[in-house]
Amino acid sequence: MCGIVGYIGEQQAFPILIKGLHRLEYRGYDSAGVSLINSKGELSVYKAKGKVVNLEEGTKDKDTTGTIGIAHTRWATHGEPNATNAHPHFSQSKNLSLVHNGIIENYKSLRAEMEKNGMTFCSETDTEVLVQLVEYMMNTHKCDLYTAVQLALKNVVGAYAIAILEKSHPDQLVCARKGSPLIIGVGKSDNGRAEFYVGSDATPIIEYTNQVIYLQDEEIAIMDRTGRLDITNLANVKQTPQLVTLQMNLDQLEKGGFPHFMLKEIWEQPNALRTCIRGRVNMVDKDVLLSGIIDHKDKFINCRRIIICACGTSWHSALIGKYFIEEAAKIPVEVEYASEFRYRNPVINPDDIVIAVSQSGETADTLAAIQLAKEKGAFLYGICNVIGSSIPRATDSGTYLHVGPEIGVASTKAFTGQVITLGLLGLAIAKVKKTLSDDIFHMLVEELEQIPDKMQWTLEHNKDIAQFAQMFTYCKNFIYLGRGYNYPVALEGALKLKEISYIHAEGYPAAEMKHGPIALIDEEMPVVVIAPKRGMYEKVVSNIQEIKSRKGKIISVVTEGDTVVRGMSDYSFVIPDTRDCFVPLLAVIPLQLLSYYVAIAKGRNVDQPRNLAKSVTVE
Image (cartoon, rainbow, N blue to C red; front, side):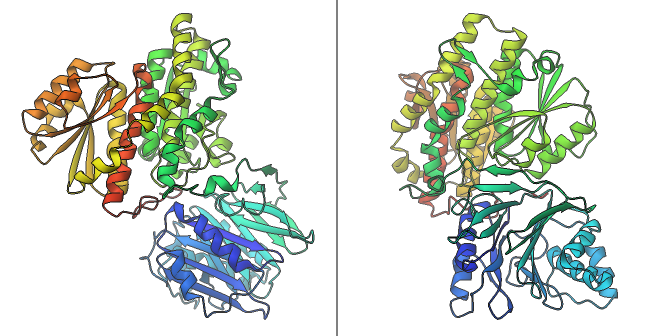
């Protein structure tokens, strides 16, 4: 959600900033802007509604020279999406320019106070209030920019990641964060002089350096052309930053010959999951090794309850994890929407374990939920994809997915990465609690190791979905049904279709169809049924018969060799046989492809669906 990129050094900043904005487009946005200090000492701001290409077009006849600058892609919160509300924002004197991710909750009272003191505002945004507040502090306290930022942020309630330029000091760049991610890239120019990059994530930085610093909450950094990088907190206590080497390469941020990142990431899943389990599954001993469990074995042995907090697609993977952990480790598991969990008074005990699941590791509601759990004394475990993100830093232990960067807004490989990681977690807990026999444990490990190959088989045997999907572009509604482990898959399939094709879809437990949704069934209602040979197969067959008798169109996901459900279906996709608990990893792939190709047939922008952001870092 929103994106920041900044640069100070010897290179021309504008090309770096524009390329960085393009790399950040996946986060979701509705306007873009850039601010530069040119060689004449002029501070310029250029903004445009819509895509980054609109900004590029609008700056063709403008002076975009300069070796320092900041840029932003905005996802509207306060104020409608237009050029006026787009970032960067000027201060009243136009001496300062600022970009901001997050939400300033007390911006109205701050604005009212400054208006009483004669300051005027041009936009509806909380961000303009912030830059005006910094200038107000500079004028009131007769201080430098760095001190003014400290003073201003002490008066702010909310979340922020900011970068700010000062016209009268064109050789320095100041940034800060609280509750919204911000990283600083440390590089060197061709002649060996220091240069710095700022980004809301690593994607606009990795082309230039893999050495980064993750700013912590309430830290403020100042960079200048001499190579100075000073970081303090709001109390003006000097901080010692840790330089981290990014485990990412530029090829991972390119489409690699695919028309869209989403399709690339669907096809990356077999290799992504091989990477995810590498070093964690020992096939010689048929064992699962998770350091996050090994290092805290007693916590899991003595745990009375696990609570998993997540949002969106991660919530669906958490449901599958619940089923598996309860079955394998015999521990009660609750799955909570983090956005609801944080706003009630949940009962949490010191012998509870709270697991936070988030692709980005920056989901605001999930971060707030684990902070609440921490205050109540629970042990915190993070499952995230982005190394160095906020959730891993806030939890006691955890596991990274290692599925590589996910650029498409609609999550695919992160979902299957979360599911298989929760499976590994369940097996690791079962091992230390001795809740599975050796035979069953070894059988599950063997089957888990084969899943990437079976995913590849599933992709290769469902290539006709591209043609078949075009027949459903007329539809306005879909129903998805699944039982047991496949109920969350039905939810995930419906969510993917909604996200990228804008067709209304709902997922239900198949047995619940008779409790309401069956009223919707007619000859124009496609019903997607996940019907593997494993599990409650006969029950699902009965559900399909009920739908067929009401002239519903059946699209099924069936096990290879199935003839019964396939014979009852109007269309079907095949998956290889596997254990019940691992079916979701295979069954979700045809549903991802179905969503993708329906959206393509409808002319949708599948990588950047409307109104959606990749990571929801504000409420």
